[in-house]
Amino acid sequence: DRDGMRDVLPERWRFRPDDTSSLAETLTRFVSAGCPLPEPALVERIRTTMSLEAFSRAFRRALIELA
Image (tube, rainbow, N blue to C red; front, side, top):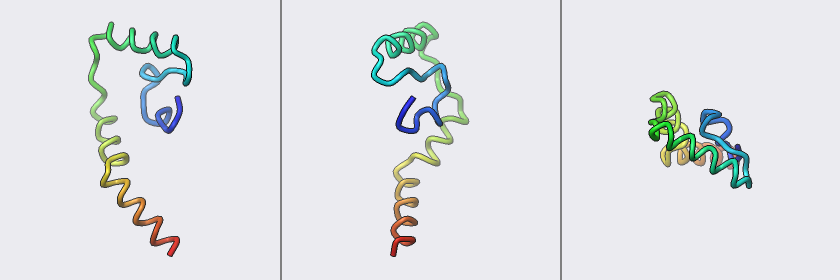
């Protein structure tokens, strides 16, 4: 639930920051569910908005705006 992951990951995959019990509960649920694959829409969103290429484009735009 920090560093932008709250906006990206489904609630069932998130846990309270700095809370080892919350992390353990989330991991236990994930493993108990057979380590399910993420939804295809989530994978596509990550690949298009959080890839190195996407970062590079955004960084370039920011530099051009600053210049």
